[in-house]
Amino acid sequence: EWSETKNVAWKTAVPGRGWSSPVVAGGRVWLTTATSVKKDTSLRLMAFDVQSGQPSLDVEVFKVSGTALQNPKNSHASPTPILEGDRVYVHFGAQGTAALSTSGEVIWKARQAYESQHGNGGSPVLYGDLLIFSMRTWHRASELTADAGARFSHHLVYRAGAHAFQGYHLWSRLGESADLQRFLQRATPRQRQAVGFPPPGHAYWNDETLAA
Image 1: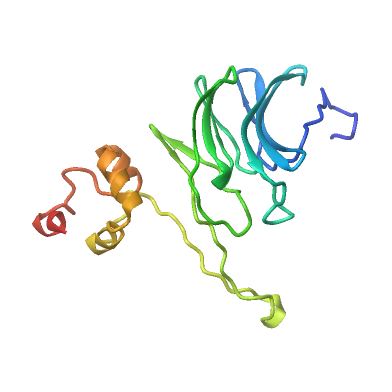
Image 2: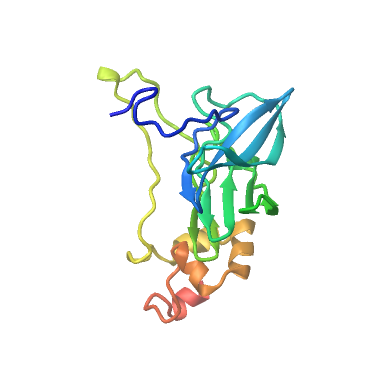
């Protein structure tokens, strides 16, 4: 049972606005937030001592022009950070992705431009040496005009890599993408397997599929 005071060890105000979930690791509570700085937005990583709630880290990772949200119900800091060893990975959608040390030093930054109807939301996933996140999240659905308020939408879902491969026609078509070609040129067999390519020695690979 909890109230404003009952069974509450500590409370700490977090500046700004962010829907990211907190992550507890290394004796600290980690989260992201977005604060307004005049006409700009500061995208930040924060950490608090797990015992006292005292702030132990507050780092600006990105600063973007403007403060407007694509959806007033969202925030500029909705994806949840990832902690792995002495690394913290943060993702702010198209506004930027970064890796920091647990002491707050920025190790690398990257921006992948894409359109999103409602702003950032999906949290990244760490898989081996890959940091994976969704892009071009765009909801296309009918208005709420159907009977009983039903809404029709089209959903894109992922499946386990162990499932039967969809066929070489798919990757032959997507192979025209410059982004995919760059990824495949750099990727290891295991990295390719993470996005659905069969591993070396798989029955899928034959003269026909290799030629495609």
